[in-house]
Every structure is written in structure tokens, then in C-alpha cells.
Length: 128
Image (cartoon, helix red, strand yellow):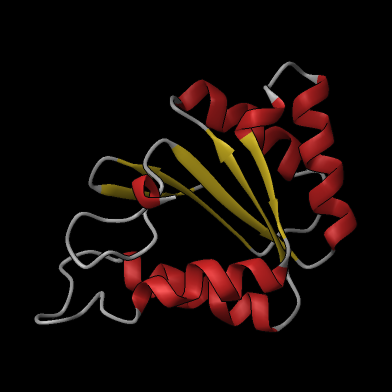
């Protein structure tokens, strides 16, 4: 969605969401289902197969450093997602507007192996 891109450079930057990638797609699905069972709206949980990451998120960094290098880390973060997606990792994109929602997500995420977990806040990408 256009609202999930940085104002400057246009890289993927879904403010108010967290992106978590998993080596095993079944683990990603299990965590997503667990969130919904705990009361998170299904409209706030997106399962992103590797191909979706590569076709929809990866291209957002093509012009992220044009005309000047980005002052933030959004380009590098997308490149990390791209590397993992090329290795077959699956992502969950989850609405986490506050610390409580992010912690609820991570309680479930920590029950399985995961590759990367990032929370997007205004002007900050936070490692989870």
C-alpha cells in the first residue's frame, strides 16, 4: 500500500507495523493464527510469502538512495528482507501501534525460530 512507504525515497516503511521473518512458513502461519486467537484482528495480520516480499517490497529500494543516500536504515532493512526472502523465508506484517501490541507479538514469535523482527515507528525502526 502507498501508505507503507517512506515519504523520502519511497522505501518500504509501514509505520505502526512490525515485520517478522521466519525460516519456516508453518511457523509464520502458526504465529499469525495465535495472534488472531488472542484477539488481534485478522485485518491487522498479513502473511507474506517470499515471492511477495521480492515482488512488492524489494522494488521499493530501487530509488531509496536517489538523489542522495538515505539518512535512515529503511533501505538496508529492505535489503535484509530481500536476502532472507531469496533464501525462502516467510514474513508476517502485523499492526503494532504501541509497545504492548509489539510485546504481545514477540511473546508468540519467540516460541519459534525467526530471522529478523523490526517494529516501524515514526522515524525509528526498532529491533524487537
